[in-house]
Image (cartoon, rainbow, N blue to C red; front, side, top):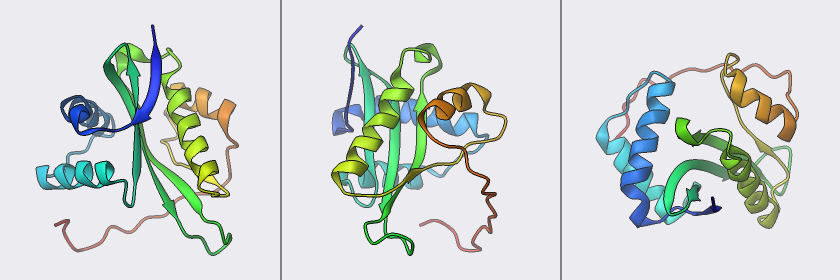
Amino acid sequence: MTLTVRPLEKRDEAAWRRLWSGYLDYYRTALPDHVTDGLFQRLLAGKPHFARVADKDGAVIGFVHALPHASTWSLDGYCYLEDLYVDASARGTGAGRALIEAVYAEADARGLTRVYWNTEAGNGTARQLYDRLAKLTDFVQYRREALVRDG
């Protein structure tokens, strides 16, 4: 098995959409097609997000989306790892770790001082990996959904 992590490309669209659908299913949500279409275009452009895919022997088996941003606590900025997903059949192969490490490498190259992300408290399998790669904080997330619609 040859596992590589590389930037998302136009040719990855069908595989990315299949994985994106699995990711949304995991989080028990659905998005309108125009939101997914717009996201894919932003990811290809690399603005404001950047995306990497895990490629195993020519097949895309996972993705990560990250969002560099300014911070009031750092002049250099932070990086929010927004989405991470590896196909169920490829879990345990090191793809998740490789995708996170690719975000770390990009954040380092951009001089960003923090990479951070959220996950569900009950996401035990993923949290075993996260506990090896980052520090769990005591922060609790509060959220207000906007009253406006996407698009």
